[in-house]
Length: 565
Image 1 (cartoon, helix red, strand yellow):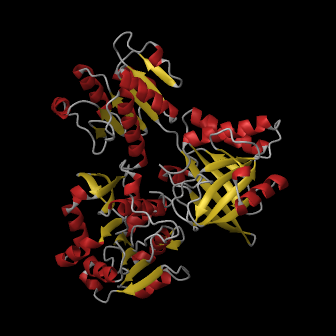
Image 2 (cartoon, rainbow, N blue to C red):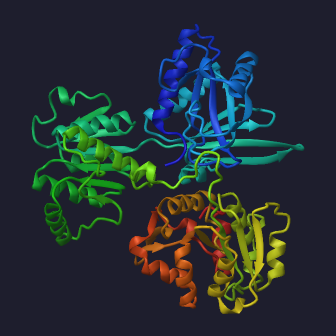
Image 3 (cartoon, one colour):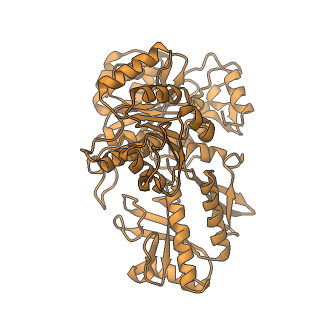
Protein backbone atom coordinates (compact mmCIF):
# COMPACT_ATOMS: atom_id res chain seq x y z
CA UNK A 1 0.00 0.00 0.00
CA UNK A 2 2.02 2.94 -1.29
CA UNK A 3 1.19 6.63 -1.55
CA UNK A 4 -0.33 8.76 1.22
CA UNK A 5 -1.95 7.08 4.22
CA UNK A 6 -5.34 8.44 5.34
CA UNK A 7 -4.02 9.22 8.80
CA UNK A 8 -1.30 11.42 7.27
CA UNK A 9 -3.95 13.49 5.52
CA UNK A 10 -5.90 13.97 8.74
CA UNK A 11 -2.73 15.08 10.54
CA UNK A 12 -1.91 17.53 7.74
CA UNK A 13 -5.44 18.98 7.92
CA UNK A 14 -5.10 19.50 11.68
CA UNK A 15 -1.69 21.14 11.24
CA UNK A 16 -2.91 23.44 8.45
CA UNK A 17 -5.97 24.44 10.50
CA UNK A 18 -3.82 25.07 13.58
CA UNK A 19 -1.35 27.24 11.66
CA UNK A 20 -4.20 29.27 10.18
CA UNK A 21 -5.84 29.80 13.58
CA UNK A 22 -2.53 30.87 15.11
CA UNK A 23 -2.02 33.56 12.46
CA UNK A 24 -5.54 34.85 12.00
CA UNK A 25 -6.02 32.99 8.73
CA UNK A 26 -2.98 34.64 7.12
CA UNK A 27 -0.58 31.82 7.88
CA UNK A 28 2.85 31.90 6.23
CA UNK A 29 3.11 28.14 6.82
CA UNK A 30 4.60 26.07 3.99
CA UNK A 31 3.51 22.59 2.89
CA UNK A 32 6.37 20.34 1.74
CA UNK A 33 5.50 17.32 -0.44
CA UNK A 34 8.16 14.70 -1.13
CA UNK A 35 8.32 13.85 -4.84
CA UNK A 36 11.42 11.76 -5.58
CA UNK A 37 14.88 10.72 -4.44
CA UNK A 38 17.71 10.15 -6.88
CA UNK A 39 15.26 10.77 -9.74
CA UNK A 40 13.05 7.84 -8.71
CA UNK A 41 9.49 7.91 -7.40
CA UNK A 42 8.92 5.22 -4.78
CA UNK A 43 6.65 4.24 -1.90
CA UNK A 44 7.01 7.34 0.29
CA UNK A 45 6.36 9.75 -2.58
CA UNK A 46 3.52 12.07 -1.62
CA UNK A 47 4.45 12.24 2.08
CA UNK A 48 3.84 15.74 3.46
CA UNK A 49 4.96 17.98 6.31
CA UNK A 50 3.88 21.46 7.36
CA UNK A 51 6.60 23.97 8.27
CA UNK A 52 5.50 26.86 10.43
CA UNK A 53 7.33 29.89 11.89
CA UNK A 54 5.49 29.25 15.16
CA UNK A 55 6.31 26.59 17.71
CA UNK A 56 5.20 23.10 16.77
CA UNK A 57 1.80 21.90 17.93
CA UNK A 58 2.89 18.34 17.27
CA UNK A 59 1.57 16.10 14.50
CA UNK A 60 2.87 16.94 11.05
CA UNK A 61 3.99 20.51 11.92
CA UNK A 62 7.73 21.28 12.12
CA UNK A 63 8.95 24.69 13.38
CA UNK A 64 11.07 26.47 10.76
CA UNK A 65 13.36 27.57 13.59
CA UNK A 66 14.57 23.96 13.97
CA UNK A 67 15.91 23.90 10.41
CA UNK A 68 19.35 24.80 9.12
CA UNK A 69 20.96 25.35 5.75
CA UNK A 70 19.37 25.15 2.31
CA UNK A 71 16.02 23.68 3.40
CA UNK A 72 15.34 26.59 5.76
CA UNK A 73 16.35 29.11 3.09
CA UNK A 74 14.07 27.54 0.50
CA UNK A 75 11.09 27.44 2.90
CA UNK A 76 11.56 31.05 4.00
CA UNK A 77 11.85 32.17 0.37
CA UNK A 78 8.58 30.42 -0.55
CA UNK A 79 6.80 31.86 2.49
CA UNK A 80 8.02 35.36 1.60
CA UNK A 81 7.19 35.18 -2.13
CA UNK A 82 3.85 33.40 -1.76
CA UNK A 83 4.73 31.23 -4.78
CA UNK A 84 5.36 27.46 -4.92
CA UNK A 85 8.76 26.06 -5.84
CA UNK A 86 10.18 22.62 -6.65
CA UNK A 87 13.32 22.48 -4.49
CA UNK A 88 16.16 20.00 -5.03
CA UNK A 89 17.97 19.16 -1.80
CA UNK A 90 21.09 17.04 -1.32
CA UNK A 91 20.79 14.70 1.65
CA UNK A 92 24.12 13.37 2.88
CA UNK A 93 22.16 10.97 5.08
CA UNK A 94 18.56 10.21 5.99
CA UNK A 95 17.62 13.63 7.37
CA UNK A 96 15.25 13.19 10.35
CA UNK A 97 14.06 16.81 10.06
CA UNK A 98 12.06 16.09 6.90
CA UNK A 99 10.42 13.14 8.62
CA UNK A 100 9.78 11.23 5.39
CA UNK A 101 11.59 8.04 6.39
CA UNK A 102 13.41 7.80 3.04
CA UNK A 103 16.04 5.38 4.31
CA UNK A 104 18.67 6.43 1.77
CA UNK A 105 20.78 9.47 0.88
CA UNK A 106 20.57 11.32 -2.43
CA UNK A 107 19.06 14.26 -4.27
CA UNK A 108 15.52 14.84 -3.06
CA UNK A 109 12.83 16.73 -4.97
CA UNK A 110 10.42 18.48 -2.61
CA UNK A 111 7.51 20.68 -3.71
CA UNK A 112 7.20 23.67 -1.37
CA UNK A 113 3.85 25.50 -1.36
CA UNK A 114 2.63 28.41 0.73
CA UNK A 115 -0.50 27.30 2.59
CA UNK A 116 -3.19 29.22 0.72
CA UNK A 117 -6.97 29.05 0.82
CA UNK A 118 -6.96 26.97 -2.38
CA UNK A 119 -4.52 24.50 -0.86
CA UNK A 120 -6.60 24.22 2.31
CA UNK A 121 -9.68 23.56 0.19
CA UNK A 122 -7.86 20.82 -1.78
CA UNK A 123 -6.71 19.04 1.40
CA UNK A 124 -10.15 19.40 3.00
CA UNK A 125 -11.79 17.82 -0.06
CA UNK A 126 -9.38 14.91 0.24
CA UNK A 127 -10.21 14.57 3.93
CA UNK A 128 -13.94 14.54 3.15
CA UNK A 129 -13.44 11.77 0.57
CA UNK A 130 -11.54 9.68 3.13
CA UNK A 131 -14.20 10.27 5.77
CA UNK A 132 -16.68 8.82 3.27
CA UNK A 133 -14.20 5.93 2.91
CA UNK A 134 -13.63 6.79 -0.74
CA UNK A 135 -10.27 6.87 -2.50
CA UNK A 136 -8.82 9.55 -4.74
CA UNK A 137 -5.75 10.47 -6.78
CA UNK A 138 -4.03 13.78 -6.04
CA UNK A 139 -2.44 15.46 -9.05
CA UNK A 140 -0.08 18.42 -8.73
CA UNK A 141 1.96 20.11 -11.44
CA UNK A 142 5.58 20.26 -10.29
CA UNK A 143 7.11 21.72 -13.45
CA UNK A 144 5.49 23.84 -16.10
CA UNK A 145 3.47 27.03 -16.53
CA UNK A 146 0.98 26.08 -13.80
CA UNK A 147 3.44 25.02 -11.11
CA UNK A 148 1.57 24.07 -7.95
CA UNK A 149 -1.83 23.59 -9.62
CA UNK A 150 -3.63 20.77 -7.79
CA UNK A 151 -6.47 18.54 -8.92
CA UNK A 152 -8.37 15.71 -7.28
CA UNK A 153 -9.54 12.74 -9.37
CA UNK A 154 -11.98 9.96 -8.61
CA UNK A 155 -10.34 6.49 -8.64
CA UNK A 156 -12.34 5.40 -11.72
CA UNK A 157 -11.28 8.39 -13.85
CA UNK A 158 -9.53 6.93 -16.95
CA UNK A 159 -6.68 9.44 -16.56
CA UNK A 160 -5.63 8.01 -13.19
CA UNK A 161 -7.30 4.59 -12.87
CA UNK A 162 -4.11 2.62 -13.44
CA UNK A 163 -2.19 4.71 -10.89
CA UNK A 164 -4.90 4.13 -8.29
CA UNK A 165 -5.25 0.39 -8.93
CA UNK A 166 -1.49 -0.15 -8.76
CA UNK A 167 -1.31 1.89 -5.54
CA UNK A 168 1.88 3.45 -6.86
CA UNK A 169 2.75 7.17 -7.19
CA UNK A 170 4.02 8.21 -10.60
CA UNK A 171 5.34 11.15 -12.60
CA UNK A 172 3.78 12.05 -15.94
CA UNK A 173 5.85 14.12 -18.36
CA UNK A 174 4.55 15.74 -21.53
CA UNK A 175 6.14 18.16 -23.96
CA UNK A 176 3.95 21.15 -24.74
CA UNK A 177 4.85 24.18 -26.86
CA UNK A 178 8.55 23.44 -26.51
CA UNK A 179 8.47 23.13 -22.71
CA UNK A 180 8.19 20.20 -20.30
CA UNK A 181 5.17 19.82 -18.07
CA UNK A 182 5.58 17.37 -15.17
CA UNK A 183 2.63 16.22 -13.11
CA UNK A 184 2.92 14.15 -9.95
CA UNK A 185 0.12 11.63 -9.32
CA UNK A 186 -0.34 10.17 -5.86
CA UNK A 187 -3.06 7.62 -5.02
CA UNK A 188 -4.80 7.88 -1.65
CA UNK A 189 -6.61 4.72 -0.60
CA UNK A 190 -8.96 4.58 2.38
CA UNK A 191 -7.75 2.16 5.03
CA UNK A 192 -10.70 -0.08 4.25
CA UNK A 193 -13.35 -1.70 6.38
CA UNK A 194 -12.80 -3.78 9.50
CA UNK A 195 -15.36 -6.15 11.00
CA UNK A 196 -14.54 -7.28 14.54
CA UNK A 197 -16.74 -10.08 15.88
CA UNK A 198 -16.70 -10.41 19.66
CA UNK A 199 -17.12 -8.25 22.73
CA UNK A 200 -14.22 -9.05 25.04
CA UNK A 201 -11.27 -6.83 26.00
CA UNK A 202 -9.23 -7.88 22.96
CA UNK A 203 -12.08 -6.92 20.61
CA UNK A 204 -12.54 -3.51 22.27
CA UNK A 205 -8.81 -2.70 22.21
CA UNK A 206 -8.53 -3.86 18.58
CA UNK A 207 -11.43 -1.61 17.54
CA UNK A 208 -9.66 1.38 19.13
CA UNK A 209 -6.40 0.66 17.31
CA UNK A 210 -8.11 0.18 13.95
CA UNK A 211 -10.26 3.31 14.30
CA UNK A 212 -7.16 5.34 15.20
CA UNK A 213 -5.50 4.09 12.00
CA UNK A 214 -8.45 5.29 9.90
CA UNK A 215 -10.35 2.05 9.28
CA UNK A 216 -14.13 2.05 9.03
CA UNK A 217 -14.81 -0.22 12.01
CA UNK A 218 -17.90 -2.28 12.87
CA UNK A 219 -17.99 -4.33 16.07
CA UNK A 220 -20.61 -7.10 16.06
CA UNK A 221 -21.83 -9.64 18.58
CA UNK A 222 -25.26 -11.36 18.42
CA UNK A 223 -25.35 -11.96 22.19
CA UNK A 224 -27.61 -9.38 23.86
CA UNK A 225 -26.04 -6.61 25.92
CA UNK A 226 -22.43 -7.54 25.19
CA UNK A 227 -21.42 -4.30 23.39
CA UNK A 228 -22.25 -1.93 26.23
CA UNK A 229 -20.35 -0.06 28.88
CA UNK A 230 -17.46 2.40 28.93
CA UNK A 231 -15.15 0.05 27.01
CA UNK A 232 -17.43 0.28 23.98
CA UNK A 233 -17.81 4.04 23.80
CA UNK A 234 -15.22 4.31 21.04
CA UNK A 235 -15.17 7.20 18.58
CA UNK A 236 -15.49 6.04 14.98
CA UNK A 237 -16.69 2.52 15.83
CA UNK A 238 -20.22 1.35 14.93
CA UNK A 239 -21.83 -1.29 17.12
CA UNK A 240 -24.13 -4.08 15.93
CA UNK A 241 -26.03 -6.58 18.05
CA UNK A 242 -26.04 -9.23 15.37
CA UNK A 243 -23.99 -11.83 13.53
CA UNK A 244 -22.40 -12.24 10.12
CA UNK A 245 -25.54 -11.90 8.02
CA UNK A 246 -26.55 -8.59 9.60
CA UNK A 247 -22.97 -7.28 9.45
CA UNK A 248 -22.67 -8.24 5.78
CA UNK A 249 -25.81 -6.25 4.94
CA UNK A 250 -24.50 -3.21 6.86
CA UNK A 251 -20.92 -3.20 5.60
CA UNK A 252 -20.90 -4.96 2.18
CA UNK A 253 -17.44 -6.57 2.58
CA UNK A 254 -15.04 -6.13 -0.34
CA UNK A 255 -11.39 -6.84 -1.16
CA UNK A 256 -10.34 -4.00 1.17
CA UNK A 257 -12.12 -5.57 4.16
CA UNK A 258 -10.46 -7.19 7.18
CA UNK A 259 -12.45 -9.58 9.39
CA UNK A 260 -11.35 -10.65 12.87
CA UNK A 261 -13.22 -13.40 14.73
CA UNK A 262 -12.90 -13.05 18.52
CA UNK A 263 -16.19 -14.43 19.86
CA UNK A 264 -14.52 -17.32 21.79
CA UNK A 265 -17.67 -19.34 21.04
CA UNK A 266 -17.15 -22.38 18.81
CA UNK A 267 -20.65 -22.14 17.30
CA UNK A 268 -20.39 -18.39 16.64
CA UNK A 269 -16.87 -18.73 15.23
CA UNK A 270 -18.08 -21.45 12.87
CA UNK A 271 -21.03 -19.36 11.68
CA UNK A 272 -18.90 -16.21 11.27
CA UNK A 273 -16.07 -17.99 9.49
CA UNK A 274 -18.47 -19.63 7.07
CA UNK A 275 -19.72 -16.24 5.96
CA UNK A 276 -16.34 -14.50 6.03
CA UNK A 277 -14.59 -17.17 3.94
CA UNK A 278 -17.28 -16.85 1.26
CA UNK A 279 -16.78 -13.07 1.15
CA UNK A 280 -14.11 -11.14 -0.82
CA UNK A 281 -12.37 -10.06 2.44
CA UNK A 282 -8.57 -10.10 2.04
CA UNK A 283 -7.78 -10.70 5.72
CA UNK A 284 -9.61 -13.09 8.04
CA UNK A 285 -8.10 -13.48 11.50
CA UNK A 286 -9.04 -16.05 14.11
CA UNK A 287 -7.68 -16.50 17.63
CA UNK A 288 -7.49 -19.79 19.52
CA UNK A 289 -5.40 -23.01 19.60
CA UNK A 290 -4.40 -24.68 16.34
CA UNK A 291 -6.37 -27.83 17.20
CA UNK A 292 -9.57 -25.78 17.54
CA UNK A 293 -8.85 -24.03 14.24
CA UNK A 294 -8.33 -27.38 12.51
CA UNK A 295 -11.68 -28.62 13.83
CA UNK A 296 -13.43 -25.50 12.53
CA UNK A 297 -11.79 -25.80 9.11
CA UNK A 298 -12.66 -29.50 8.89
CA UNK A 299 -16.35 -28.74 9.54
CA UNK A 300 -16.28 -25.94 6.99
CA UNK A 301 -14.56 -28.17 4.44
CA UNK A 302 -17.40 -30.68 4.83
CA UNK A 303 -19.69 -27.79 3.85
CA UNK A 304 -17.39 -27.11 0.86
CA UNK A 305 -16.22 -23.82 2.39
CA UNK A 306 -12.42 -23.46 2.20
CA UNK A 307 -10.12 -20.46 2.72
CA UNK A 308 -8.47 -18.85 -0.27
CA UNK A 309 -4.66 -18.82 -0.32
CA UNK A 310 -3.16 -16.12 1.88
CA UNK A 311 -6.47 -14.92 3.38
CA UNK A 312 -6.84 -16.84 6.68
CA UNK A 313 -4.52 -15.89 9.55
CA UNK A 314 -4.86 -18.33 12.43
CA UNK A 315 -3.83 -17.72 15.08
CA UNK A 316 -4.17 -14.03 14.26
CA UNK A 317 -1.44 -11.57 15.13
CA UNK A 318 2.30 -11.05 14.80
CA UNK A 319 4.53 -12.80 17.31
CA UNK A 320 5.43 -9.97 19.71
CA UNK A 321 5.13 -11.98 22.92
CA UNK A 322 1.64 -10.65 23.61
CA UNK A 323 -0.06 -11.67 26.85
CA UNK A 324 -2.44 -8.88 27.90
CA UNK A 325 -5.56 -8.05 25.89
CA UNK A 326 -4.16 -4.74 24.63
CA UNK A 327 -0.95 -6.49 23.52
CA UNK A 328 -2.89 -9.18 21.64
CA UNK A 329 -4.99 -6.48 19.95
CA UNK A 330 -1.82 -4.58 18.98
CA UNK A 331 -0.34 -7.76 17.45
CA UNK A 332 -3.50 -8.33 15.37
CA UNK A 333 -3.70 -4.68 14.25
CA UNK A 334 -0.04 -4.79 13.20
CA UNK A 335 -0.63 -7.99 11.21
CA UNK A 336 -3.61 -6.43 9.40
CA UNK A 337 -1.49 -3.43 8.44
CA UNK A 338 1.38 -5.68 7.32
CA UNK A 339 -0.98 -7.83 5.22
CA UNK A 340 -2.50 -4.75 3.55
CA UNK A 341 0.99 -3.41 2.81
CA UNK A 342 2.23 -6.75 1.46
CA UNK A 343 4.82 -7.01 4.24
CA UNK A 344 5.80 -9.89 6.49
CA UNK A 345 5.95 -7.90 9.69
CA UNK A 346 9.58 -8.77 10.52
CA UNK A 347 12.08 -6.55 12.30
CA UNK A 348 13.21 -3.46 10.41
CA UNK A 349 16.70 -4.07 11.80
CA UNK A 350 16.85 -7.36 9.87
CA UNK A 351 16.57 -5.57 6.54
CA UNK A 352 19.83 -5.49 4.67
CA UNK A 353 20.08 -1.77 3.98
CA UNK A 354 23.09 0.16 2.83
CA UNK A 355 24.55 2.47 5.50
CA UNK A 356 24.14 6.22 5.00
CA UNK A 357 26.51 7.47 2.34
CA UNK A 358 26.98 4.00 0.82
CA UNK A 359 25.47 3.17 -2.56
CA UNK A 360 22.58 0.73 -2.59
CA UNK A 361 23.40 -2.70 -4.02
CA UNK A 362 22.51 -2.98 -7.69
CA UNK A 363 20.10 -5.66 -8.88
CA UNK A 364 20.39 -6.40 -12.63
CA UNK A 365 17.45 -7.16 -14.89
CA UNK A 366 17.55 -9.74 -17.69
CA UNK A 367 15.07 -9.25 -20.54
CA UNK A 368 14.88 -12.31 -22.79
CA UNK A 369 14.00 -11.20 -26.32
CA UNK A 370 15.83 -13.68 -28.55
CA UNK A 371 13.09 -16.11 -29.60
CA UNK A 372 11.57 -16.40 -33.09
CA UNK A 373 7.95 -16.01 -31.96
CA UNK A 374 6.75 -18.60 -34.47
CA UNK A 375 3.10 -18.45 -33.33
CA UNK A 376 2.90 -14.75 -34.14
CA UNK A 377 1.77 -14.31 -37.75
CA UNK A 378 2.53 -11.03 -39.51
CA UNK A 379 6.06 -10.01 -38.61
CA UNK A 380 8.37 -9.77 -35.64
CA UNK A 381 6.12 -9.76 -32.57
CA UNK A 382 8.46 -7.71 -30.37
CA UNK A 383 8.46 -4.97 -33.02
CA UNK A 384 4.66 -4.95 -33.30
CA UNK A 385 3.05 -1.66 -32.30
CA UNK A 386 1.25 -1.24 -28.98
CA UNK A 387 0.08 2.30 -28.24
CA UNK A 388 2.40 3.56 -30.96
CA UNK A 389 5.58 1.90 -29.67
CA UNK A 390 7.10 -1.57 -30.20
CA UNK A 391 6.20 -4.22 -27.64
CA UNK A 392 9.86 -4.69 -26.68
CA UNK A 393 10.30 -0.97 -26.12
CA UNK A 394 7.44 -1.01 -23.60
CA UNK A 395 9.15 -3.82 -21.69
CA UNK A 396 12.55 -2.11 -21.68
CA UNK A 397 11.13 1.30 -20.74
CA UNK A 398 9.27 -0.28 -17.81
CA UNK A 399 12.51 -1.91 -16.67
CA UNK A 400 14.44 1.36 -16.97
CA UNK A 401 11.73 3.13 -14.95
CA UNK A 402 12.41 0.69 -12.09
CA UNK A 403 15.45 0.26 -9.84
CA UNK A 404 16.99 -2.44 -12.02
CA UNK A 405 20.67 -1.73 -12.78
CA UNK A 406 21.90 -2.72 -15.29
CA UNK A 407 19.09 -3.70 -17.65
CA UNK A 408 20.44 -6.45 -19.93
CA UNK A 409 18.48 -7.22 -23.10
CA UNK A 410 19.30 -10.55 -24.76
CA UNK A 411 18.58 -10.49 -28.51
CA UNK A 412 18.87 -13.33 -31.00
CA UNK A 413 16.43 -14.01 -33.83
CA UNK A 414 15.80 -10.78 -35.78
CA UNK A 415 18.29 -8.93 -33.60
CA UNK A 416 18.33 -6.01 -36.04
CA UNK A 417 14.59 -5.49 -35.55
CA UNK A 418 15.13 -5.62 -31.80
CA UNK A 419 17.83 -2.95 -31.99
CA UNK A 420 15.56 -0.77 -34.09
CA UNK A 421 12.82 -1.09 -31.46
CA UNK A 422 15.26 0.24 -28.86
CA UNK A 423 16.69 3.05 -30.99
CA UNK A 424 16.96 6.35 -29.19
CA UNK A 425 16.86 4.96 -25.63
CA UNK A 426 19.58 6.82 -23.78
CA UNK A 427 20.21 5.28 -20.38
CA UNK A 428 23.62 4.24 -19.08
CA UNK A 429 22.05 1.19 -17.43
CA UNK A 430 20.91 -0.33 -20.77
CA UNK A 431 23.07 -3.11 -22.21
CA UNK A 432 22.27 -5.27 -25.23
CA UNK A 433 23.89 -8.67 -25.80
CA UNK A 434 23.46 -11.27 -28.53
CA UNK A 435 22.69 -14.97 -28.11
CA UNK A 436 24.08 -16.78 -31.15
CA UNK A 437 22.43 -20.01 -29.97
CA UNK A 438 18.95 -18.52 -29.76
CA UNK A 439 17.47 -21.54 -31.50
CA UNK A 440 18.18 -23.41 -28.25
CA UNK A 441 15.28 -21.57 -26.63
CA UNK A 442 14.91 -19.38 -23.55
CA UNK A 443 17.30 -21.55 -21.54
CA UNK A 444 20.23 -20.56 -23.75
CA UNK A 445 19.25 -16.88 -23.60
CA UNK A 446 18.98 -17.01 -19.82
CA UNK A 447 22.44 -18.53 -19.61
CA UNK A 448 23.82 -15.71 -21.79
CA UNK A 449 22.12 -13.18 -19.55
CA UNK A 450 23.39 -14.77 -16.32
CA UNK A 451 26.95 -14.54 -17.64
CA UNK A 452 26.46 -10.78 -17.89
CA UNK A 453 25.37 -10.35 -14.27
CA UNK A 454 27.96 -8.10 -12.57
CA UNK A 455 30.29 -9.75 -10.11
CA UNK A 456 29.03 -9.15 -6.59
CA UNK A 457 25.36 -8.83 -7.55
CA UNK A 458 23.25 -10.91 -5.17
CA UNK A 459 20.99 -12.13 -7.97
CA UNK A 460 19.06 -11.05 -11.05
CA UNK A 461 15.48 -10.32 -12.08
CA UNK A 462 14.19 -12.12 -15.16
CA UNK A 463 11.65 -10.49 -17.50
CA UNK A 464 10.25 -11.58 -20.85
CA UNK A 465 10.31 -9.34 -23.92
CA UNK A 466 6.68 -10.14 -24.81
CA UNK A 467 5.13 -9.03 -21.47
CA UNK A 468 4.60 -5.25 -21.76
CA UNK A 469 2.15 -5.04 -18.84
CA UNK A 470 4.78 -5.80 -16.17
CA UNK A 471 4.99 -2.28 -14.77
CA UNK A 472 7.79 -0.55 -12.81
CA UNK A 473 5.84 -0.73 -9.52
CA UNK A 474 5.69 -4.52 -9.75
CA UNK A 475 9.38 -4.82 -10.67
CA UNK A 476 10.35 -2.64 -7.69
CA UNK A 477 8.06 -4.64 -5.41
CA UNK A 478 9.83 -7.87 -6.42
CA UNK A 479 13.22 -6.18 -5.91
CA UNK A 480 12.17 -5.01 -2.43
CA UNK A 481 11.09 -8.50 -1.39
CA UNK A 482 14.24 -10.07 -2.85
CA UNK A 483 16.49 -7.58 -1.04
CA UNK A 484 14.67 -8.27 2.22
CA UNK A 485 14.69 -12.07 2.00
CA UNK A 486 17.51 -13.10 -0.36
CA UNK A 487 15.17 -15.79 -1.72
CA UNK A 488 13.34 -16.43 -4.97
CA UNK A 489 10.63 -13.78 -5.33
CA UNK A 490 7.81 -13.47 -7.83
CA UNK A 491 4.14 -12.48 -8.08
CA UNK A 492 1.35 -15.06 -7.90
CA UNK A 493 -2.15 -14.70 -9.29
CA UNK A 494 -5.31 -16.82 -9.45
CA UNK A 495 -5.17 -19.38 -12.24
CA UNK A 496 -7.31 -22.27 -13.43
CA UNK A 497 -5.36 -24.70 -11.25
CA UNK A 498 -4.88 -22.42 -8.21
CA UNK A 499 -2.09 -19.89 -7.67
CA UNK A 500 0.26 -19.46 -10.63
CA UNK A 501 3.73 -17.93 -10.52
CA UNK A 502 4.48 -14.99 -12.79
CA UNK A 503 7.02 -12.32 -13.65
CA UNK A 504 9.24 -10.55 -12.71
CA UNK A 505 11.18 -13.47 -11.26
CA UNK A 506 14.01 -12.59 -8.87
CA UNK A 507 16.67 -15.32 -8.85
CA UNK A 508 19.29 -15.42 -6.07
CA UNK A 509 22.86 -16.01 -7.19
CA UNK A 510 23.04 -19.28 -5.21
CA UNK A 511 20.53 -20.76 -7.71
CA UNK A 512 22.42 -19.71 -10.86
CA UNK A 513 24.40 -22.97 -10.90
CA UNK A 514 21.29 -25.08 -10.33
CA UNK A 515 19.48 -23.36 -13.21
CA UNK A 516 22.43 -23.82 -15.58
CA UNK A 517 22.80 -27.47 -14.53
CA UNK A 518 19.19 -28.22 -15.46
CA UNK A 519 20.10 -27.33 -19.07
CA UNK A 520 16.53 -27.33 -20.29
CA UNK A 521 13.84 -24.93 -21.42
CA UNK A 522 12.27 -22.93 -18.57
CA UNK A 523 14.91 -24.22 -16.15
CA UNK A 524 14.39 -21.21 -13.88
CA UNK A 525 10.65 -21.88 -13.75
CA UNK A 526 11.36 -25.49 -12.73
CA UNK A 527 13.67 -24.19 -10.01
CA UNK A 528 10.89 -21.85 -8.86
CA UNK A 529 8.50 -24.80 -8.54
CA UNK A 530 11.06 -26.83 -6.61
CA UNK A 531 11.70 -23.93 -4.22
CA UNK A 532 8.03 -22.81 -4.13
CA UNK A 533 7.57 -23.30 -0.39
CA UNK A 534 10.55 -21.11 0.52
CA UNK A 535 10.00 -18.45 -2.15
CA UNK A 536 8.54 -15.03 -1.43
CA UNK A 537 5.24 -14.85 -3.30
CA UNK A 538 3.60 -11.49 -3.95
CA UNK A 539 -0.19 -11.90 -4.34
CA UNK A 540 -1.92 -10.13 -7.22
CA UNK A 541 -5.68 -9.74 -7.46
CA UNK A 542 -5.65 -10.96 -11.07
CA UNK A 543 -3.36 -11.75 -13.98
CA UNK A 544 -3.64 -8.49 -15.92
CA UNK A 545 0.04 -7.64 -15.48
CA UNK A 546 0.95 -11.14 -16.71
CA UNK A 547 -0.52 -10.77 -20.20
CA UNK A 548 1.98 -12.02 -22.79
CA UNK A 549 1.89 -11.80 -26.56
CA UNK A 550 2.22 -15.13 -28.31
CA UNK A 551 -0.18 -14.52 -31.20
CA UNK A 552 -1.60 -11.61 -33.17
CA UNK A 553 -4.88 -12.17 -31.31
CA UNK A 554 -3.08 -11.61 -27.98
CA UNK A 555 -1.78 -8.29 -29.29
CA UNK A 556 -5.25 -7.31 -30.53
CA UNK A 557 -6.66 -7.89 -27.04
CA UNK A 558 -4.11 -5.50 -25.55
CA UNK A 559 -4.59 -2.92 -28.31
CA UNK A 560 -8.37 -2.98 -27.90
CA UNK A 561 -7.96 -2.59 -24.15
CA UNK A 562 -5.70 0.41 -24.66
CA UNK A 563 -2.82 -1.38 -22.94
CA UNK A 564 -4.91 -1.65 -19.75
CA UNK A 565 -5.66 -5.38 -19.74
